[in-house]
Length: 251
Image 1 (cartoon, helix red, strand yellow):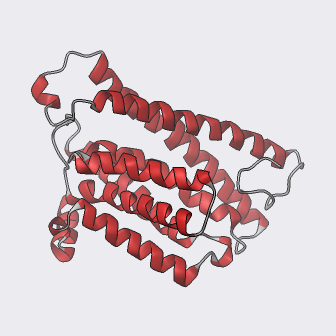
Image 2: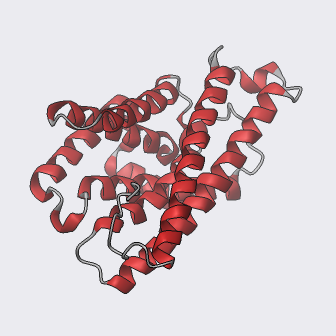
């Protein structure tokens, strides 16, 4: 696996690109996808592509880290080039979100999402610790299925199957895995006796930023988890059709 990642790096020269350059390139590519595909078939294609790339690259990196470096500390640095550039890709997605929200006069929620995404990823990328936030991009795996919720290409049965996958991935990654990983770092920073050298790479305000980051994102995921349960119950009880209201807003 490491040899394959190294081959990708050598072929594409990924190590030569800074996080800022990766972010800008990502924003430009997403812009091209928006212009060429728009929302064909009810799918936000740029969002889908980003979710697939960031979510599954994160999964690959987490698996690689667990297999090759199970006892790593916070300041070991990125294991591979993919550990470094994946958060930068999401930083570019945040830039694109902000640009689209401001130029197309979208809702404040859309703009705030872009600002939050860009701000969090920029914090880790600019402080040269992108590998710490990388596992939390596992949450994007559920976004893959969320994007397909409004697809006009899918049949009723396919929509139901996709919704099932969305619920499973949402609860597994957003409400189980990521809070568990977040709490592990909270425990290390606030409750364990840690050698100063083991956290020497972290900014002075890191533990408070990490605490706030987790409270906000875990709180939002919990809020949306409740809304998802209510939506699934409405569909099971026949109060809402399978293809109706799949923006996750209340009827």
